Image (cartoon, rainbow, N blue to C red; front, side, top):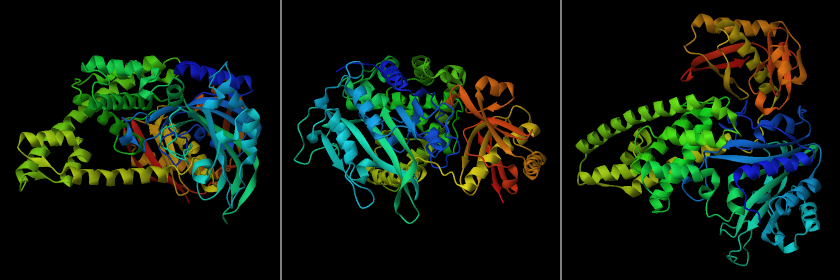
Length: 595
């Protein structure tokens, strides 16, 4: 079996699928374009949503990429052997082109070929859909696997919860998948041991999703007109598995970061469970924060949405750095290590190096003040205390509001001869975790964003809004993110001050004027350079490659975008701005509706 690092795996994967006729496309932003289901890009398929639903991709119908992803539902699990908040997802895509035979055969070739990962066939196991009243057993996938060389005992039939993807909501594209696992060689945990176990014998490497059904409103399933293949291989996890490492934190992705933390703290990774966990959390959280700040759209710390998640990650990293005795201001050294490590793959980190540096220092200053306030609050708690025990709810409030880890509260309490109700704290903490996970599940129900007629019109309106804002406020305005539901649009844009009432009213008037002009909306494919020459605004150009789609609305708006769009501005109705507010430092937010 081949020993490879992250850079080699990226290169091998992209080159393999490029040789199979796939166009290599760049990673999209971590901030989803008009997807209300999730705060961050959580899978490779998110940026490709319009094309999975039938739109033509400028690069063709066979694509491959390495997508930056963030998942934050398990932040509190980071520190174990496998959880990461940021990760890279290797993917290959068929948009109505090839299907199961090619996808499975190529997966097998990449995993087992001497030229690529060279995993012995006997060390593989796969799972396929077992079938139910909605769809038949996926014997086709099983037969293809056996034709590749797998034995029947290496193939496991599992139910929907294991081997079915989607739909994203109540209705929409969905289908069975086949998952690939590496057999570690550990003994089976029992007669029913298999890939569905958590015993550690089988580690998932790759997943091929076959979107072949459409779930209708009545709950029945019909075959899709355009069948897609959507695959995902976690880069960090795969490097860990094929190198026989115990955790992703031992891969080259984290090795330099861990060494940097050791130098800053004077402690050694592995010297104790507490030190190891702290170093893993710091390494993970600072990497994620670096990518969020350095993203081509990017966010800054705030108290809402993506900015809140970023703030939480930075502050949690700071707490564990203090636990290791690392001095204030040293976080940027670790962030700069990541900028250097990823500079060839993600050039946006280099472009935003100064922003990363400045924002991390600013947030560390703010958090230091919050901790000082927390110490004052702790003193007030002690002064009001009736007895010698700080209750769990109070300890949790110190954690949630002021950033006090329970260890800090316990330490301060011990100095005053007090104890803390740890069980009560853990109960409140578990309740908090459950709410966070439910919120995460609600935002990400499977992946495909809602592209109904209403959201399509609202998406079109964001183009008109941006054009109007640039006319009213100047070329300083650039889109920093958007979020669309069936009820409203939310548009974040770069601007240094609050808009006046007159400016808001004028922007609204200009949008409605463009709507009333009933301008046809045209789309043309061209190179990025041609788009720029024509004056198109390129907000998300990196994710489309050399050929991009440019949507034009009269002489009012011209933007590079993937869609979806209405056919005529006159279809939109009446545009109403309901709120203008701050989103984060240097970024304003507008909420608006179509009535």
